[in-house]
Length: 138
Length: 134
Image: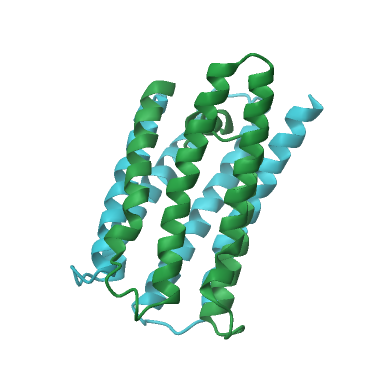
């Protein structure tokens, strides 16, 4: 649309397969959120609703670890370390945001002090990092 | 004239940042705006995207353009246009539900979003398969 797939892969630093994985996780997550909100499955915990997102993060980390090891073995050490660092940073920021949001939704009374500004703060950091990376890729 | 990657990223970045800030302020009850107003960056960004797509598609009407050149391109742009309209439909019904203008199920509200996600996954899958075959 605004970006070609090649530009997206270069900018975000994720492989096409990983993008596919995260899109699939988002689809399953949105289905579970809708089912939970419409009370089709009333007893479902919010932690269970977030499982697809956590699973996608885990699989993406595993995939990145394998790619980095392969790159390291092929003597592309700098590329391997840079890729590993970037993907782990992005995934950890995403994971922190997901865990905080899930905690807020699951324990609404106990997590009253957890305001949304704090929950979304990893996304603000991620946005700055993505902007810097876009300038480098450009 | 084609925008550079940095310009397109900047455009996306600015609208995402403004939307996130407005969303956080609304969720933390710091502002009491209408949900349709909170989604203003989304409406603006989608309008810009639609205008850009329509201008590109209108370029086919120029005299001397051979329609066989970009048959696949046109199909892809039509899909992008449909995707943006579906996303707009999702955001509009979501805002209407949040404002309690309607009482439809969230599962119904999410149908356009699911259609966009499935379409994007099919396109991504096709790209992976296409490149592998090449």
